[in-house]
Amino acid sequence: MSHKIVTQTLTNEIQVKKSRFIATIDSVSNIGQASKFIVKQKEVYRDAGHHCFAYIIGPPNIPKTSACSDDGEPKGTAGKPILNVLNNGVIGDCIILVSRYFGGIKLGTGGLVSAYTAAANKVYRAVRTKPFIQTLKCRIKCNFSQEQFIRHLLKQYNGDINECIYTNELYMDISIPLDAKYALQEDSLKHKFFIIN
Image: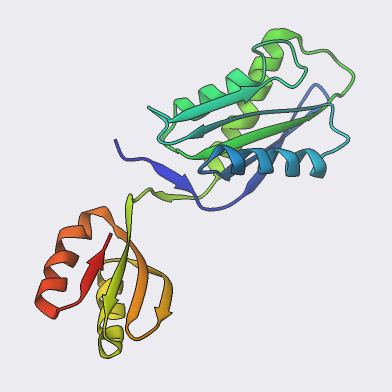
């Protein structure tokens, strides 16, 4: 199943019985990025009482890894509801963190589950996304005279040039959609440039 990825950082807020729930969603592709995001959000809302989060790395139906935290809220009332929003959606490689400012009225466990779910859902539904396209990274070795042709070719394949290394010959580190791999290989034989994996 193909999934989507987040293309922006977005923050939304809801209020429940005077408590503020500020939810922020962002794209993360590894645990290190998720950890940095959590640290950053805790700093942004440093006076909030709780910073509850969930993230998934990989597609939502079968993530490579996932984690969640109640951050001092009663067990299972915050992190798990946020994670459920992520697991039941179509967006992969993302994190939602909800910072809570207590409004003086206790919500109870059911109220907390409902509030964290609502906050996560609101930001999840509002964020901009794009389809996830699996890419292949490789290096092209070619003559300088072929550079413009290869740049044009990569544009046709929706590929990206990550780096060019100019020595006696030209090396181009590229990323292309996985489904363009065989077409690029055919072009390399036809136009006499080399693909190095």
